[in-house]
Image 1 (cartoon, rainbow, N blue to C red):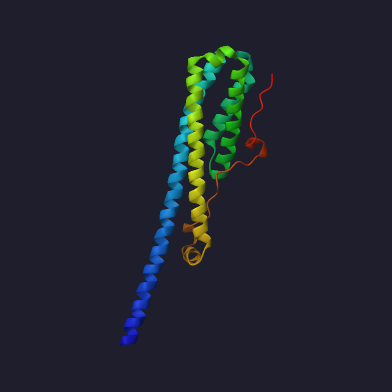
Image 2 (cartoon, rainbow, N blue to C red):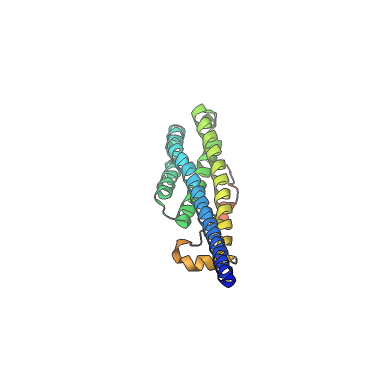
Length: 186
């Protein structure tokens, strides 16, 4: 009789342990998805600001159409990107294109002095800072989740539940050139 209670007790403790690990994995995965959602909210804000910025620049630098077209094309590409890796590459291209618009403002003093442009530039800069913060938060959550997937004993639970828990991709800069500051020359 005592042996039966011991076996039942061990099974209950094991079950509680497995449930705890499983719930921890689920909570962390939900945080990863929440962090990704935070990035998408800031990206949407950036997408909404870009057409206003482009229209403001058009009035002052109409012969810079190629630069403006690159920004619009990069924006459209970023909006249509799917998945973390594709989205990251597209967003990095858009960031580079936006840097070229800000470089244009240096060549056109009237544009730089325009209140609408200055306000849009400030809002976009604020949004870029929020995107960077959201990326750092997301990457931290991905790090925590991927670590849980690989450490003992949660890696055994992951193996048991199969495809429910998959390694997540970091949101990072792929191209070394994009890590460099933009150099403005006239």
